[in-house]
View (cartoon, rainbow, N blue to C red):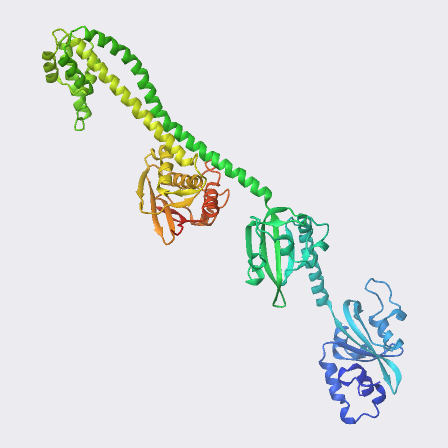
Length: 614
């Protein structure tokens, strides 16, 4: 058989797939030239060879020669191709010729295609091959077959890699605790991993596949209101062709119960065309519980800190009031004794009136220095000593408080009955001391009352959770609560716009924000620094700015500043929840925004609260 036998190549070549019986009647103009056939065989990358009915090679193209490791077609022509290149199965077992698929082409007179066998080179090595075997005939008689084959080593490697990749993906999907499912452009489920099936309360993925996932698990908002599919964040992934991340919604199980979920939705494409999206979600019930416990812990920590400061603030006036009350009890006993003795001196009405004026007198001491007061007390003490009073130093402060000096005492002595001055001095000094102690108790208890009022205003006890407030009241009550921290020396600057409108917020929770921000600013500023509170209007928002001139927040951690558990303080000095709580209160409870900017010497936290239209 030669390469010029056109009848053979009408079977092999798709360009001349005519039935053999038309061969002799075909016009020479429709026959391929020997040159054309030879060129095609030489140019193709497929190995092509022919065998006769005995399986011996009748021709082999250059690609066949090369792929089988031959020097030329002489290594193949006339030799049994099954014994030469197809003698052994991929398993290593002998491959009987009667089982060979190649020979089915002429045994059954039909073409076959095989893609799971190997071809052996003459050097004893092999490669995976895909081949096609087609019968050929001459003058209507079966003459053998033509075999075309390709080395599929690279394709098999790619298929193995793809299979491994698919197995890896499948293993990851099966192993992960996240629920993962896919939806097509209609929102219908295309796959669901075991975690997804379990978390949604299903027995198998058959309960999800092909069904609309929004209608199945995402139909209702956390508030109980219907969740329109066109508002669903999950479908933003393919509507806007971008990934979305949501952490404040719920997912519904098939039994009608729900759980809080955080989820991610990402678009997927096939051959460059958008095909749907993949959704991964986690049940965050436990995380919410732990975060709530930590937030409560942070609140208790802040409350403990405020309580310590408040105890310190209350202790001073309470101790002063207690000391004054104790001394007053002694002084009142003495005053009663001095009054009895004074009454025995037969003072007339004018003399009593004079003493009552001195008792109630409130002299101006604003220009008197402490040194001047000490000198005057010494002079009064000396005056009393000169007149036989050994304990005159005890009475000098009271007499000075009544506005008496040496000259005034001389004048008073002339107005009183003879021999009564000692009783006059004792009674007047004691009564003035009692008055001063009463004033001390009054001032101390007033200070305590103010502190209690500040606590009530800070916590908004006995008031509605949400109300219209002046933010300056909350800032001032917070400062009063943190006064002990400011006493370390930190300078406080107020730049308030008192014309700002009132805002409707949960005031008690907002004061917790002020506590966190101001306390952090005081810590950052230190004893020699300054904290500035500013309020101003910016469009439809009221802005409260808490600034300090401390070292600033390092640039490499600024992106984490509102993250839970993140803190720039030393170990044991902070839980890392303060700013996270502040952010949640501002955003979720007050519907506002919180941000900051920081550089060395200037850190500013800004809280923006919406101003409702009048």
